[in-house]
Image 1 (cartoon, helix red, strand yellow):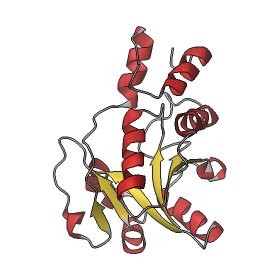
Image 2 (image 1 turned 60 degrees about the vertical axis):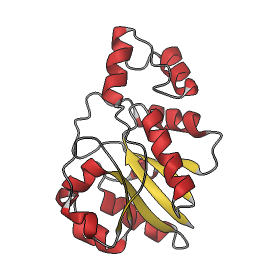
Image 3 (image 1 turned 45 degrees about the horizontal axis):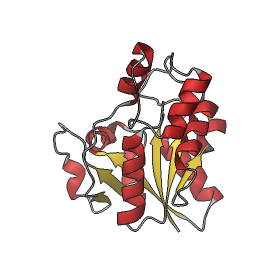
Length: 190
């Protein structure tokens, strides 16, 4: 089984994440897409992060009816900050019957050489890349393990959603209805 790993803070998970994950599951050779909820991204500050279990609950609520998508808490018990290469190594050892690939935005491909052990990842794993707006082309496009996926260019950010919530504006259509209900009932990001 070929699993696409979609790493992120998902703070909160939004329609852009869901659209990209579904396109990956429907239009590529990936059998499933796992949303790997990151407790702490090494490149982001953690001050505005909702607790990881709350973010995992929102991911589960958003994808409950799609069997091609799965939420993963694999990084919750790993050293923080979590690095993709360590998570890949752990999953490879835990699930030797599965093939793992990465799903990343075109903006992350440009900065990919800065990732811990990026050369090892690139040589041993497929990267499924979705387009992002206003990104300079990467030299990695020609690498045989990099696959550009035809997907809509979506420019929705969790930061924008959190700002809307703080201002009391509607987030309808930006997030799944079940996620909006959780945010409202639990007063997340207020």
